[in-house]
Image 1 (cartoon, rainbow, N blue to C red):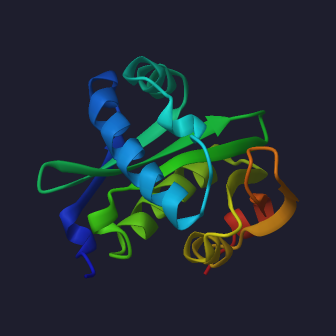
Image 2 (cartoon, rainbow, N blue to C red; image 1 turned 90 degrees about the horizontal axis):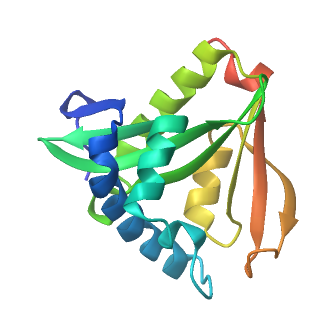
Amino acid sequence: MPIDTADIRIRRACPDDAKILSLIIREAMIKYAGVSNIPGTLPSLTETVEDIGKYITEDTVLIAIISDEAVGTIRIRQVSQTEAEISRFAVLPEYQKSGLGAAIFSAAEDILKKARYESVFLHTSLDNRNLLNFYISRSFTVESESFSQGYRRGLLRKTVNLIFKTV
């Protein structure tokens, strides 16, 4: 069911959000691991509330809220002056495929544009076709593939000419 984007509020997370973000990430990543047929435990599932609080302080973490309920998140980590990494993109399962993920991702891309990064990268399961297609539809390309985490994992990248393209 699509959500009216006017109902979505996206803001930078604050340390007080760490606990709810931990729950959102956990619920979304459990589903992600199942859909992706990932064996074992994902690193995102071992992070503590304190870990997430540290990321909120050190990185740019966004939180999405609908009707006063936190329902999604994304993390942007500066790797260098010209490059950033997106991680912990998580939407509660009941809000997936509603347009919420696209709204969160667009908000993250706005931050990347303002910061003038030359490229942004992320990792995802190559066996999760819906998520992979989501990223590809946003001009990410698969740069490499590995089995370093015990599953078929891709490194996806988007370069400056695609981040800053005008419509």
